[in-house]
Image (tube, rainbow, N blue to C red; front, top):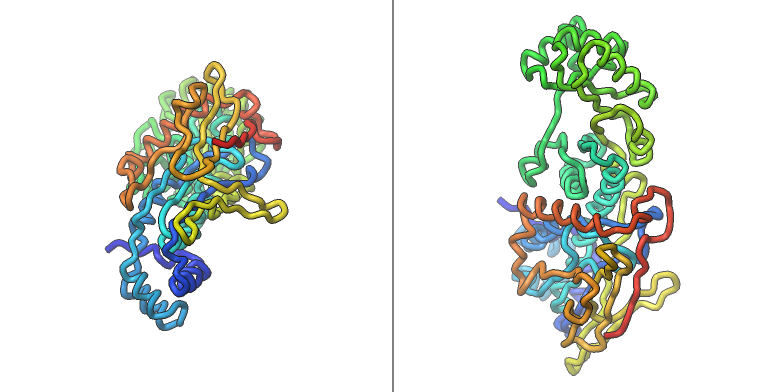
Length: 440
C-alpha cells in the first residue's frame, strides 16, 4: 500500500488553507516559485536533484482516513477544511528545470500553478526533497570534478537517516558518481551497486590470509581485498600470494593516503600485480580527492561527506508566491521586500545564454502579465531551461523511476560541459555565472 505523504508538511500550511477557505481567497489562482537567493557554501554552481522523487511524492499527497482523523482529533483545521482535504488532488501544473540541470541564484527551479489551496500545502514537501537532494548532488558534482576520469562510489548510508541514505545515493549518481553501496537505491532507482567486505570480515577469521582466501573463493580473483586491517605492506603481500597477479583490486581505508597509495602501488608492481587497482576511502571529500590527483589511485569511495553535502547540508531553496489573481481575476505580481530576503515578483521564463557553447549568464525574463511568456525563439543565443513537469495534475512519466534517474544523470553530464572553467574550481567564490533579470 502506498504511504501518504500528506502530513510531511508544516502545520501553518494547513492553517493558511483553513483561513483561506473561510474568506474565499483559497480559490484564487496563484503562481509559486522555488528558487535560491544564493548558492550555499560559496559554491560556484548548484545541481538540481530530487525532481523525480518530488513528483512521486506529489502523486501520493492524499489525505486518507488516518490523516484526516489526526487532523480532526487534534483540532488542527475545522470540519470544512477536513472535507476539502478528503478530496484533495493537485490538479495544477508545474514547470521547472530538468533534474540534473545546473542552477544559480534566482533560478526558478520550479514554478507551481494552481489555486492557493492546492499549491500552498506543497511547500514543505517540495523544499524537503529539493533542498536535501540538491545539496548532495552539488557536493557530488564537485567531487566528480575533482576525481576526473576516476570512478566514485557512494558509501555513506550509515551516516544518514535510512530514507535520506537512499535519496543521497540517487542524487550522487545523478551528479557523477558511478555506484552506491545502498541496495534500496539500486532496487528503487536503478543505481548500480557495489561492495565486498569490511574489516569485520578479516577480524572474523583466524588469519588475514584465511579471510582473503575465503573472499576469493566466494567472489573470484577480480574482487577487491581490504588490506589495512593490520599491517598494510603485509596485507598487500598476502593478497597477491592468495589471489596471484590477477587480483582485481585492493582497498585502503586509513593512513596518509597519498603516501600509502604510492607505497602500495610500488609494492604491487614489485610483486607483479601491475593491473591490480587501488581504491581509497577514509573520510574523503572533494578537497581530499583533489589532493590525490597525482597519486596512483584508481577509484574512490566517499561516505559521510557526500551524504551531508560536504559541510553544506541544504541548498537553501525557498518557496514563494510570485503572482496571484486579484478579486476580479486580474493577475498581480507579488514579492517580499524584506531586507536581504527580497524576491522578484511575476511569472518567469529562464534561459542559459551561451557563447560558442560556453555558458555566460542565467537570463531570467519576467513577464509583465501572465498570458505571454518569453520563448526560446526570442533568445536564439540561449538555451531554454524550463520543461513541463506536471500538466493538469499528471506528472511527466519520463521524469519518474529509474529511467528518470538515468535521464537526469545524462542531462547533468551534458550541461556540466557548458560551464566556464572558473566554475570547476573548488574554492569558495561568487557564482560562476551572473543572473540577469529583464522585463518581457
